[in-house]
Image (cartoon, rainbow, N blue to C red; front, top):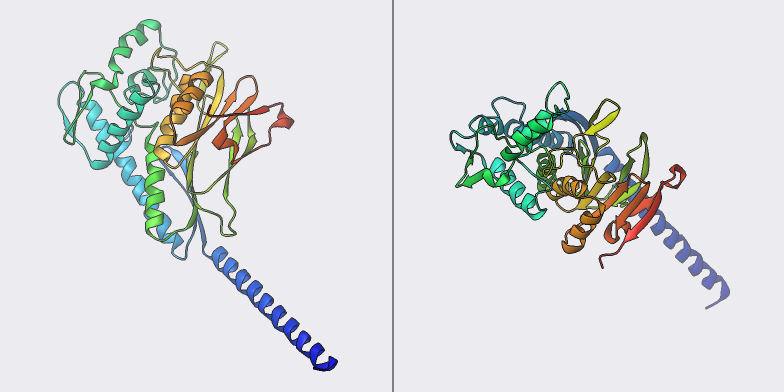
Length: 356
């Protein structure tokens, strides 16, 4: 073969290769453009919080509407502020009669009792009378006296929430359940299930800070969730990268009031009836279950750092990030793998804890 033919064949191969590469790039770009065109976003208010939805799907608008309807269905069952909700009717019947409840309410009450028992009572679905005494479910905040708390604490035993064949009985008059520490997590699981059932492969949903990321972003990168700086609402301590995971944060900085120069936050220690004081500013849980993450973020905050880490070491299925009053950000080893710390400029320090 002469030199001219060799050069001609080489040139043809180069043109062919370049053409294939260009077509691949064009196809890739077209797919990315289509995905961006299928990006649908919405913001709504339910369960006493702001909720945001980002769904990548050609029917995204309708799917978001379906998700919002599911959330409102749950709110109408579980709210303690809606007079005709199942939970309100259950609380009104405390010490009087058993109430038949729906499957959703039953699931949450049963899970709440079981998860609460597993945390040694750090999470308590029956804590409502004490929370109400502090005014966190009322218009006015109030520091209750020790006598008030001593009278209310006997009404907060979850063992007195009796479950029997879809009926629930609160054994003592004055008892009340509050599913606020588990309901949004359950709702995020239900929304994620609904979206996946409709073919959604890429979405992120935030139900008042209860975040669930489905799949990845359209470009293949993982979703990122900011770890808030509890001392500055306009700042964050780092970024958590997730794929098909829930992220839930509980902290005393989220809801509180001041009286006589002292701050009182809304996360009550069931053992004392007072806001938990254990050196923590926040606890963030990363889990495949939004419901579990919701419960454990509260429970580990009540436990404190040492007992919270011990619970993590003895139980699998989740990871945690603690922010302490002394400025430490402490991640369990699984959380460390998906967390980018960015708090050095704000005098935070960072360390990772191994399982053992």
